[in-house]
Amino acid sequence: MEEKQTYRSGNLIILGIVLSIITYWLFAQAFLNIGPHVQETYSGASAGIINLSISLTSLITGIFMVAAGNVSDNIGKVKVTYAGIILSIIGSLLIIITANPALLIIGRIVQGFSAAMLMPATISIINTIFTGDRRRSALSYWSIGAFGGTGFASLFAGTIATFISWQWIFIISIALSVLALFLLKDLKEVKTTKVESSRFDYLGLFIFIIIMSALSIFITQGEELGWTSGISIALIVITIVASIAFYFVERRIKEPFIDFSIFSNKAYIGTVTANFLLNTTVGSIALFNIYTQSELELTPFMSGLITLPYVVLILFTIRVGERSIKKYGAKRAIVVSPLILAVGVILLSLTFLGDTAYLISCLIGFALFGIGIGFFATPALDTAVSTTPPEKVGVASAIFKMASTLGAAFGLAIIISLYTALEGAMDVSTAAMIAFGLNVVAIIIGFLCAKFVIPDRAVE
Image (cartoon, rainbow, N blue to C red; front, side, top):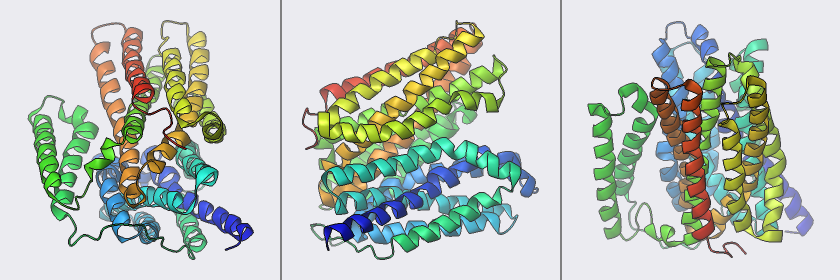
């Protein structure tokens, strides 16, 4: 294939991949902001059913993402991508064709499986068919689709639901999914060198699903269940026991579900750990909204406007982070990003300031949020996939993205729970400041992991 043709077809592939992943980051995640509108349509559904439908897609995605990455390594990344896009279309149709709550729940489950398949498979495709600067550029657009989609989900969903109808969110998603299939229709499966296994590790898959299910339910439902309740303790015990069993089972299998040799790669493990810890900042964003709306009496719209610098700057700085790899190496951006984020959270923690001064501080803080995440996104993702053997990129990228999901969930659970526990014992502003401070500690640990675990020449 000639270079000019390769470049053009490569651009179309990147566009198709971006359109496929925003079916989750922009459209499926829009459900977080349209709960009341959805309940008006599903008049027979209780608030509990609606709340379940909101959280279910992320829960399913987190549980099955690594399994889907493993499958993509074994049966083909392109096949899994096609399947993920088709499931996205089916899930959207199930949600909008009827007002039956059962189909709503099934549709959200299907969307979760779709996202779990698309994320690792599309990253693997990029890593397989692009190299060097072209790969980093493609990963930047992937990150823009993911982080940009998430950032605009609230504004997009609110606009569509208010001025048209919330169902149009998923009608548009279906249309873009069909376009993604068209753009990717000529994409050929690229074979990687892999020792054929006589049988798939179903036992490893089963144990891993138990681990992730118990852990995810504990994280997402722990506050409602009670962190020290019998059910929560049982979930922790199941997670620990199943993890130990998983380790010993996988060590005995020739072709395990997760090859632990991935974690002997210092560049990979350092990047994944930093990724997990930096994503705990989702908890600080949630705490900011809770604090400003309850104590400063801001409306949700006003709180959202203050976070706007985060969305805008992340889109600008993702490409800057990509370009910095060639000039300075990936590690520098990965190390600097936590420091920028830490300063951003410190500015959110200055709750002792007057209302106006505090909000100005938060505007600057969210700008630093965007810069920090933007610098981190492409260098971290590029390091994770480029330092992993090609035949393991699917599961490696899935673990990387799962670290993002779990980091966000842990951040939400721990930071909000600490704030809730402290506000009854002290001044609310002090409770918020301490909760923000805990997040700063987590980010600094992420900085130390990036600084001392990742080798200086992690990515060539």
